[in-house]
Image (cartoon, rainbow, N blue to C red; front, side, top):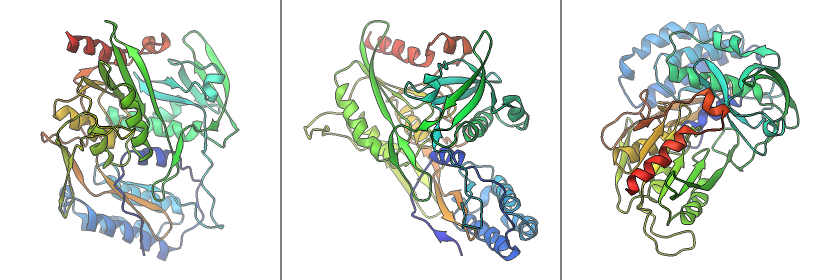
Length: 437
């Protein structure tokens, strides 16, 4: 029987969580357990999917086709492959399995608690370093943005890329490559990753220490621990105006107070830039409070449609600062930065403010994985991630599969990365000068 875990609306942070779970092939699963697990997954989706018509899919026929294969699965891996195929038939995001560590008779998930301190993106067919944590192992090894990743532990990146179907849409390719790399460059804290790069002039082999991930630990249900980071800095526009730039990595409750303090620091500045690049989402309800820092009246951001009802998301004006003093929400220009790894709650926030004309969006089209999701434990211990609602912005824009399309698209190039430039942020700062004029 499936176990209902706490019903929390979560978003793209599932991508991060799944990326950090690496499981080896498991021993045989009894056919009764396999059939029971498949049946539970099929039933949960039948009963909770936001579209009773299942996107036009004959769900009974899917069951009839795949159930025999599931019942005959000899290993957990074979069973998971069948369930994943079933989920893939829906053609939507936020349907996935998180493998269970199981009991003592099973192989536990690999330890991926150590972070090398770098981020990568697929740019023009090349896997490039786009960000280096100043306090991480990559910075200590003198790795720079713009370096092209060639291999991990001696295994060429080209082999990973070859696994992806040629027909895979570019945004999905970006996400899947990131996920595959994340599971390979992480490892136990204190261990080292053997990486090979092209630094623009020559090939460089580097041994990178995997360190404890910075940030405030936070958990949701059965998902692996996330580490919340909120950063801010003051930047100058080309015209000399002062702008507050705030970035955070995931939508979790700990962000709220830290974000509010950052807003207070920049309340009198010419503009605020919110950097959501690489932010895969989190708790969707948080967009109502964060958006309230920029809207004086309660405004609709979008609507989540489930099978039973419709949940309206509206801004909650923040009229008191972190010190308890009466204030007005920030009324100046707001820019939001996005990229191909901006997902879910981040997309709902950016798309919601964009639809109201309250923010201008810069960067690359976002992930297009905006559906809210819940998770249920299956009989074999795996956790089933499944979408239970659809989200459209206030102007009727459906973000799933489309993503947030920037008002000002800005391409990422290796030349800019190697030169230490950030054209997306630069475009937003230049726009602020235009707003002041």
